[in-house]
Length: 167
Image (cartoon, one colour):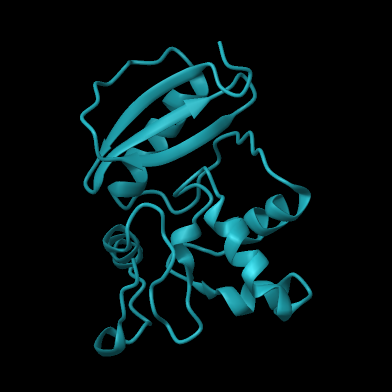
């Protein structure tokens, strides 16, 4: 079996099927799929904990996840992802502000690229990272899901009249 992950299961959310992969150390992947899938009923406690917490999140009973993560990326990517994890439920941050928090606003493209490489959607909440003018950009799970997630988290600070979608 692959060294990166050895357990796989699916979670059926209000916005589509989510594939969950885990190693013995933690979650390695959480991503939306558009294909049909069957629940695997994993015996992996990390996946089962994640499914329970995802249920609570979609039921608006959970704002913070505490599932073990097994992040794979460069040191810079991990730095970005940990900063993204610190963006609280119901809030957002622009790519520019995120780059500035990491010490160099000129690294906006590097921050955006690192965010795009995030393999653990929702738990590393990259949907909370938006464009500087409030537009919703850059979400691998589709912009409509990003919008849904922000609204689900009662994130209504962006200007809906000027909302621009970029695929």
